[in-house]
Structures are given as structure tokens and as C-alpha cells.
Length: 384
Image: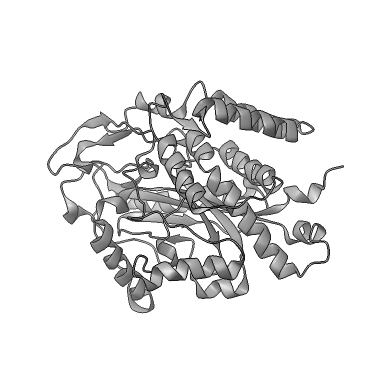
């Protein structure tokens, strides 16, 4: 009998959206909320980031997201503003309409950090918005499979192995949830306007999205080796901090995402590839999160492997290719990408064959191989 503790875990969401005025233009008002940890900003002042509490299930985390969303919408209604529930930004004139998040006082260091990012990456990449899914297995489960090893070391090793698997498969949830194939021409050309279909199903996850200027390759022999490999890039000036590691998957310590905090071990893993889905009231379908959870469970049981620099670079290449609108000729491990996705979903169906609810989640994702979400969204009147 399978260990049922494997399905227990902790779940959290971070949802980024832009604020727009009644004309659908980027809001130029100050962030209207106190930075209380639940409602804040990411990179720019006209962006809102909702951060749910840690929750015990997908259902609970969705209720928390809805609670925060209602709170934000009520305040914005009073300001004659609304949320732009799409990963690509609305029309804007030029960079002057993209103010860097104006953190003040004790938080002013966050503003200085974002000003450095502005110099390195430019402002427009700051406008891309999405959803980050944070997950950890319950410690009770991890202790049940640790076989008497030092628990802290076992836990860190477990998440390093899971990171490798999820990183190598990050293209799959992206393929299934990419939802931003249309953009306004002002994204690339000042003064231009009007909607255009991109060559990408998700620009933010594509080669034109928010990536480092190089492909970071990390070490996985131990948590200290992993941390040291990030610190090396910081020392070389290629990264300002661990937070600048723009990869689809992240290992996170408890508290602030800093190298120093990894001294307390890995807290959870973060999946960062989810587009805002404009067809969903909260920007995400709960089944997509349930699938991400099942994928983490499934991959946690797969054999370990050596994650060479070559494989890490290939994983980034696969991820970017999965963000293409036209998948003709795109392969994963030499297999056409849609066929490879179907193979993995079939394997997952075998693994979860004793649970009808989980099989329904996988079946839901499988329908999107022939009826891709991004293609449905092309027909939506997102830019009027």
C-alpha cells in the first residue's frame, strides 16, 4: 500500500497583476495598500502581488487567493481602477509609465535593488506578470521515508533531487498552462498600438522573457554546494543576489529568499512558470495547481540522476521551446513535445490509477494537448 502521507503538504501562491485605470492604461497612482506581507508589489509601482498564507490544500489556498482578490478589487473599485488579469501588459506610451516600486523607510533597500535590475534588464520586462506556486511535502511524510538519517540533511537532499526533476520537466506545466499569445505592439515599440499574435504561447517564459543574460548552472552534491554555486555568480557580479536567479524552478529557504537563510535548510520549492489565465476569475484554474502537486509527487519518486551543466542548459532550451506557439519540430529527448507530454501524463495516470479525483485532473490536462489553452485565448478580445 502506498504511503498516503505523500499527499500531505503545504501550499502557497503568489499572484502578480497590473493595475489599470478605467481606460485600460497602466495606473499612475501610488500603490494603495500597506505592505503587510499579503498585498505588496513586485517590481513596479503599478503591479500588485498577492501572497497567500501557507495552506494545507489546494482548495484552501484558492479560497485565500479569492479573499485577497476581493479585498484588492474593492479598494480599486473606489479608485476607478481594476486588475489587468493577463500576463502581457496593456498598452502604454513609453518607459515613463513604468515606475519602479517605491518602497520607503525600512523597505527602501527593495527599491534600490529594483533600480539595479532596471539598469541591467530594462523596465519592460518588469511588466510581465504570473503566478508562482510554492509547495513542500509534509515533514511527517519526509520523516517516514528518511530511514533514520539526520533529518535536516535528508530533507535538503530530498529537495535537491526534486529540484533536478522539476527543473528538467519544467516545460510540461508551461506547455499546459501557457496563456499569453497576444500582446500590444507598444510592448516593443513606443507609440505603436493594437493587438498582435506573438510567435510565443507565453512571452514571459520564452527566449524574450525574464531570464538572466547567461544560463546559470548549479551544483547538487549537497545544499552547501548548491548555495556555493549561486554565491559564485554573486561574487562574479553576474547576479546581485539569490533572488536574481530567474529560473522556472527555485529552492527556497524559510523567510527572505537569501543565500544566508539557506543555513537553516530548504523550506519549500517554487514553480514559477504559470501564466495568468484570463479565462479564470482568479487567474488560475485549481486543476492546474492540483496537477503541479501531482507532478511533484510523481517526480519525487523517480530515480536520481546527475544534473550536468549540459542537462541544465538543455532544460532551459526545452522550457523556452515549450513557450512557442507553433510546436512543429519541437522535441524533448528526441520525441515530439506533444507526444512526450502524453507519455508522461500516461505514466502519471498509471501511478495515480487508484484515485479517481487525480485521474480526472490528469485527464483535464491531457485534453489541452489537442485543444491548447493558448489557442483558445487568441480569440479573446483582450486588447479591445
